[in-house]
Length: 260
View (cartoon, rainbow, N blue to C red):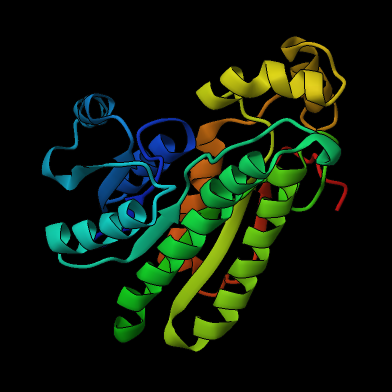
């Protein structure tokens, strides 16, 4: 018997990296899952590779848009009849500019991707979960939601805000059998990190992407990048019945990077 038998989940950014690992972990434990991504072709390829048949469906769209993230939740309910687990996981945007040089457009982009999508999705998910007095909301935040590295002010600010939203919502629904938590991954060499890493390295004064990976790894206790499967394992705990007493928490999955 699986840990998530009879449960239904939706995952933004669910076709690759952390979201894909979450989807695979949930399905392996008996859940039905709707994964979201921007690219229809990549989404269908993801479903084929997962090989889970009717247990997995795909919803296309840019989850930084309110209509898409809310549409994903409605689609999940209409497809599988309920919503038990909502993972607001889209990688978001990490602009590399110091405060004094950051444009209004760059700031707004980070707020939309990293914060607004979480608010819109959480609000919609809770509207479905509150009448049933049951549910799990999981947000993929970042260790930057506890820290604040130079060159990443918008990313740090929005991730701090996400963690505050999680704590507030958890207290609002805590007596209704609903938990709200955030996961704070450390360095993971995902596709997105490989794409944005060179610019981030320059903005942070580290020079090259290779140096960035070396420095970030050296700051952790395990001296290596983290793995998506390690993040998914924590998500599975929080999504399962074993996590029913855990709420309003921020879980670092960073190999001991943060000093507290």
